[in-house]
Length: 296
Image (cartoon, rainbow, N blue to C red; front, side, top):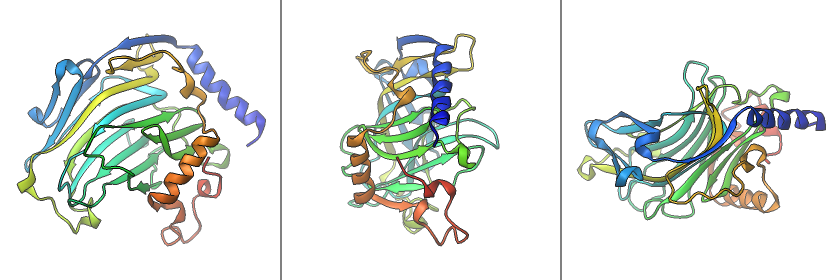
């Protein structure tokens, strides 16, 4: 990419930041999210610092952010459904609305006891997805809370797990690849039954004798540009007990340094189980354009 195009993208990000006031305020799940479905299956606890989603034979549950964001860093600590979670899907993603929506996905596909979860990622732009990468994690995500993060700026999207990059989707609009940059997105999460496809292609069904299934959330943090109001702002909104101010705007130009690139290579070499950019059978006419460029 030419230096002039890089400069233009940096200028776009900086202009957005300069037009919005910097704010830093503490919040909680009561203040920052709405329950979207599931009635009492979604519970906000501990004064808004903790949230659980439950799934039983009759319904799952979910929530969404009150705010919409246009670029930022979103962090959430999640502890996934333990034991036999086959057939269940826990989602955590950013999305706009409408047929040409943008979306940045984490989806956790459950599995039988003793088998690993599959972490499914995808990027939609202008209604088009089909950019799946899947991973097995290097830890048991049901034993403790782990941090799942999305960094989204005008140059790239970075998926991180415990601050380790697992995927980068670069802005390659210069090559005709759409990139999410104009549609504000809300944060969504849900726990639902998808045993027609989620585990081993639907061969393993949900064992309802194990219900209710529970996923837990805490320490939400949005260091991001809030859209959709006259007082739009870029700042920190968090349910963590301490926030700090160091590097609050680093996401605006965040990329991977040498250590980050090494971690990304390690994850993708050791733990990636599906990459659309390697699926020649799926794309017999040739791989998508972005697959031919550097992943960093």
